[in-house]
Image 1: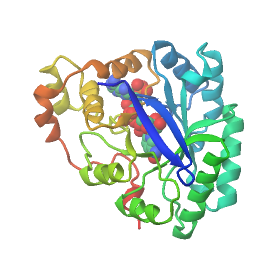
Image 2: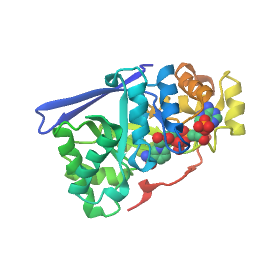
Image 3: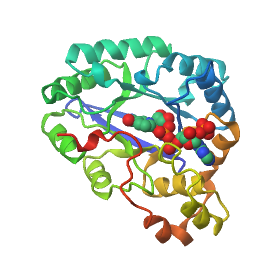
Image 4: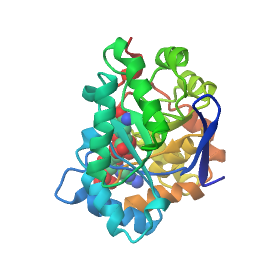
Length: 282
Ligand SMILES: NC(=O)c1ccc[n+]([C@@H]2O[C@H](COP(=O)([O-])OP(=O)(O)OC[C@H]3O[C@@H](n4cnc5c(N)ncnc54)[C@H](OP(=O)(O)O)[C@@H]3O)[C@@H](O)[C@H]2O)c1
């Protein structure tokens, strides 16, 4: 399997192509709240081979992510930085532009690799102007690519009616316990890639007895089988761990083969929402 996922997007009216390649696995940094927890986690992750970091304004750690990247010894150009426009800031064109600028400052970088609308703006009338701001940020060169997060089938359908540039990613909860075939195919239909967040259901399923039993048969851990399952759906995956050995374990999912037990993992689907689910909002 390719370790890299290529994203191609037309910019403007087909005159330019914005193209980036992103790793299939990145480090999620939500809930890294201890002093320097995020910075240390990112430095360790980069040292063992992670090349994508998924943060957000709402995680309160964009500064630490930026510091860690600068101190990692790896060239900035080799690391994909993903951050998100917070929902409370996704209220107007101007607010979206302003808060992208603040994220750039906090991260201490001059371009965000992938900028996402964290969830469909609560005010449906704000969705179009916010997306227009995302497109303008792309055209202005402040972000390399743009995407959405927590957009459901209806939100994607509406987006198609007003977007000049379609999103290249829809970041949603996806794991063996919430498989969402319809949302995954609606995402693919608009030419976007699913980025699977909470691949371990926020850790709720990391030590789940059923997947532990299944994964024993193929000599990997339950977490690895779950992450591998997400990869095999064609998704990019962003497990969170502050723990160096678990970061390593998760990265090694790339080398796991679940073919022998795939049917058993497929049967784990229970539409389990581990936290919030804005995809079902109107
Ligand atoms: N767009 C959104 O709305 C949204 C929502 C949620 C998450 N996300 C993104 O997705 C990332 C990942 O999702 P998540 O943080 O919700 O949860 P997750 O990755 O499903 O699970 C993380 C939890 O599992 C534990 N864990 C990690 N690897 C493990 C392993 N190999 N074995 C046992 N336990 C393990 C972690 O603890 P340790 O740290 O102690 O290892 C942590 O408690 C987030 O960090 C964030 O970047 C986005």
